[in-house]
Image 1 (cartoon, rainbow, N blue to C red):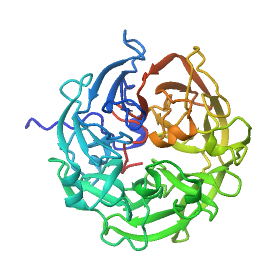
Image 2: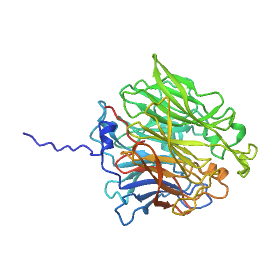
Image 3: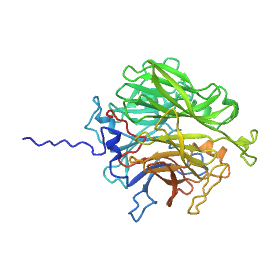
Image 4: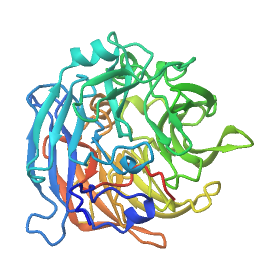
Length: 461
């Protein structure tokens, strides 16, 4: 009998249920930034010890210092993940490299975590001019490890206008290959994207063009320069097949969270603000009667308030500003960040059409101004959420986007990361023993070593 020399990456799982039984994470990689904060330093990737049995638990144990200024690290992802096990996947790849784009610079760093996961190193840098020359895109945002390559969304073109879209990198060399879209139809604005791989469907969302967002939020732009549509694509043919407007009054259609179970053709998206009453909403998109549909399933109202930053004074209210959502791997709990009010909410979405609020914690916020239970002062509010594969822990950071941070939290936003413990039957509490202080840096997306709830997609139920 022959001996197989090939060994599959042990962090790849065919199904979300199997991934939930994986070992708990021991390290988190966190995007740290100084861009547009008044601190003249490059951005960095922080390595945080999240193993409760470790002597350095809840501490930054290393920083990958970037060689350039003004990258504005934001979202980043793995080069490969469980999608490699799909029928058209490449199981010879391994979850080894972090693909880290600069949202302002359009530069891409490839960071190797294999040689020493506690001290990863930059092994390749793809300069903006190469990205532009091969793809036409700039301002890179979401990174997803597909079965056939690395996909990255982009907000716009070289001049900061649209259309935004998606580009691809080669799985092995990381070279930019080109624009993903063959036929985009009338799609112009871009932001997030994700997919249902067995059904060969991609979904994408809309924020705005770089020229609209980069210098901060201008209220007069809300009516017509921010997106409110969701787009559905034929993933193989790379063409748009349908679009839905998520309420004419709503603006900023951001994070897409498809159900992890690949037999379910549905998912959630957050709408940041209603022009009618400043509320935020969460919509369920789903395939039914041979067409794509969307329905509002959660609405969160604004809170009346007098003590507000300049940008909110005309309204005398604090909008919830739901800027991130994340879905547990069993598709049971949806986590929602209220970056204006200062809350993280947990909803039971076992019935996706009728979410039930099952947990809530207060942290920072323009409205609550709640400090950490261990006494740490919290500036900003919950923004990025990352759920562990077993669904027991939620990691939270507080920066949205540098120029917007400065408008909504003008007193100064100092980066932090906290951990919430989630009850399997519903319920949420802040872990008093976990607090990471980023000092004068700010903290954005978290990626967990081995995978997390928003990095992997699955082809088997």
